[in-house]
Every structure is written in structure tokens, then in C-alpha cells.
Length: 177
Ligand SMILES: C=C(O[C@@H]1C=C(C(=O)O)C=C[C@H]1O)C(=O)O
Image 1 (spheres, rainbow, N blue to C red):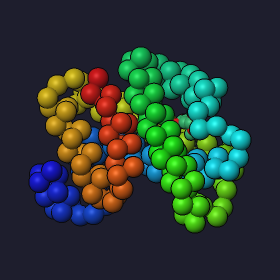
Image 2 (cartoon, protein in one colour):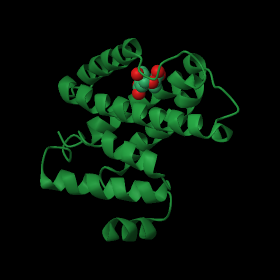
Image 3 (cartoon, helix red, strand yellow):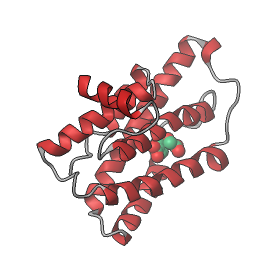
């Protein structure tokens, strides 16, 4: 933690930290977008879990991974973790908003036209980063250290609350592969 904080302080509040910094920041972005997904679904019949949509996301990941010459199994495993992390945030927010209706969002974004296209762009960016970081992400202590530093600094730099920090940890579980 001390190392991450020192690095974050040295590099300033915005710059991602370490070799996995950019990838981690994209994972942060994805768990933050979960707030919009949660807002789109709250108070509607649309369930948090949408297996059909998940299949579309994962099929796209597989096809793009092949095109990038990335291992499709590893890429799919990474995105399964991103999806689970996203749903954890949605569940946490729905619980919070049900218990404290005053905190519920006043606007309901449109999932299909406003939110999912943002997630689709993030998928493309995340895959490009998976490709760029392929060497450093080989399973090793080195990768674990890079991941830990990037994650801890991201929590601080993005001022993530417990819900989003826990979701980021969930999202990062399969990064070294
Ligand atoms: C984000 C959504 O909610 C869930 C999470 C998904 C994801 O993280 O990509 C996909 C489908 C849903 O199970 C959504 O419905 O679009």
C-alpha cells in the first residue's frame, strides 16, 4: 500500500500506476459504469443478470481475442470476472437504493442506447490492453505485484468506495494468466 501511495503521489492524481495501470483503470471504468446499468434497471422488471446479453458480450470477446491472437479462453475468463464485478456493484446499489430511496438516482438512462454502447467500447479497449500487457500478465509473482500496485493505487486515485473497490478486486482476480 505504501509503495502504491508513494507512486500515486509522485505521478500525480490522474496517471495510472505501473505496467498494469491502464488495464486496471479500464476495469475501474467498467465497475463505475455499473452505476449507470444499476440506474437503468432500478425500479424496472429488467433483471440484474441477463445471461443472453452476457453471451453476446463473451462471444464478441472470443471473436476479437482470436483476431488479436490472444488466448480466447483466458480473455473470456477475464471478461467473466468483469461481468461478475459489474453485477456485484449493481446488486449493492439496488440494495442501497431500496433501503434508502432518497439515494436512488432521479434519472433512468436507457440501457440499450446509452449504457451498453459504452460497455462495448470498453470491451474493445480492454482487449487492446490485454494484448499490450500479454507478457507482463504471465502467471508469476511479478504479475501479482504489478496487479496489486495498480489496483491499490487505482482505489486511491479514483476514490473508490468499498462497493467499487471490492468489485475492482473481483474484476482483477484473473488478470495474471
Ligand atoms: C451490464 C449489464 O448487466 C449484467 C452484466 C453484464 C456485463 O457486465 O457486461 C452483462 C449482462 C448482465 O448480466 C447489462 O445488462 O448490460
